[in-house]
Amino acid sequence: MAKSRSSFVCQACGAVTSRWQGRCDACGDWNTIVEELTDSGVGAGPKSAKAGGRATNLVPLSGETESAARVVTGMAEFDRVTGGGFVKGSALLVGGDPGIGKSTLLLQSAAALANRGKRVIYVSGEEAVAQVRLRAQRLGLGEANVMLAAETNVEIILATLENGPVPDLVIIDSIQTLWTDRVDSSPGTVTQVRTSAQALTRFAKKSGAAVVLVGHVTKDGQIAGPRVVEHMVDAVLYFEGDASHTFRILRAVKNRYGATDEIGVFAMTELGLEQVLNPSALFLDQRDDDATGSAVFAGMEGTRPLLIEIQALVAPSPLGTPRRAVVGWDSSRLSMVLAVLETRCGVRIGANDIYLNVAGGLKINEPAADLAVAAALISSLTGSPLPKDSVYFGEISLAGGIRPVAHGSIRLREAQKLGFKSVCTGRLGTADKSTGLEVSEFTALADLVGRIAANGKPREAPRDEW
Ligand code: TYD
Ligand code: MG
Image (cartoon, rainbow, N blue to C red):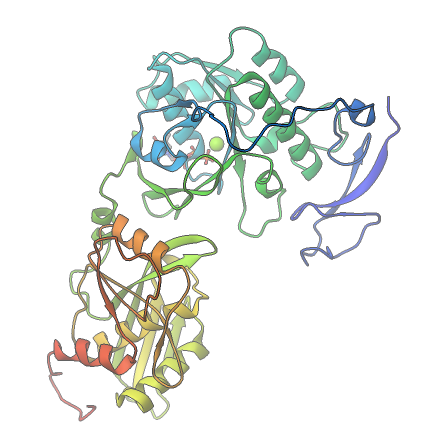
């Protein structure tokens, strides 16, 4: 037995320190450092790693290589996100909040593959076999030829997988429940998660099976999330959505075998997840028919595009100091947009009560939302509904101009994918506009204001605002 050594590992970011401290220096989180015991250091590699190396063959970069062999599930929305099916010999991480539907999604794709005659093994560390069976029956997949196991020990899982023909697909649900004999820390800690993920990734490479790891993430990152696993696997998909809504979005954030700006849209029903082949219908369904004061912002969350509805209500104020209520956006940013509308565009809006809401409970930090906010405000002020199939993005400058923002082409592609037809923005520059969207590029905010106001109807009790 190797000598045990303890180290202090941040459960949020995986940074290692030599002593305990209240705050992690690497990520700044409090109370995330936990003592972990490891035998030969964190994430112990093979014992023989320092034994005399054998030379490897060097090959030229140019050369013929056949494209990656894939296992296609036949669920079009899923296959689109993976880039055309699971790649043999690769490891894929599916992350998401607990209860969002990861197990359901993977059980359905496992059954779809098994029905195509593939060998599929589903290892559940969270649920007993009976629970998985019950769920499969409820989903109408009870007859699918998926092999089940309820196991959490990595060595036993590997021995099981190596026994018998190589599976086409292995699903491990979830990586947080696994533990390996090789390290002493408890299941769910960064060291266990990382060592287990390493072992399973190695199995995928060695055997040629596609391995899917399920991982829970929590918003505050308190539990050892799958983030430490992200750099080990070939693809990372996130399954997200609001638990109070039915729709779920599967998004690739990393993919060594395909594009990362693909999304798959599903709806959670009593019969499991249904593919939504026309997501814009679902998305627009939730918007009110009278779109006055509502603008769709084509935003980015990190590297991910996201379309978000921004709602504004501008109402005459009986108060000396009008009310400003903002949910999901920065209120000083709202003051800035209002000031620019007043002074640069001649819009008398300041004396009104103003309510601004980002639909769906999201919080936006991007300055690119300025234009959508301004459009929603003007639309509400003038009673002029914005076109329902239009998206807005652009940063407003204090001089009243509209500045271009980054990732124009990703935003356009997302809007087009979700069924939108036109876009209002600043200058797009070199962004790829070949999406079929009708693009209106504005350099001055006043031009957009004029265009929206021209469709407006006068208020019932006109108040000399214009
Ligand atoms: P699950 O796949 O267990 O989530 P995860 O593995 O991500 O934790 O799904 C959990 C939720 O999905 C649960 O709250 C119930 C709901 N659900 C349905 O609405 N319909 C269904 O057919 C199934 C199987 C689950
Ligand atoms: Mg689950």
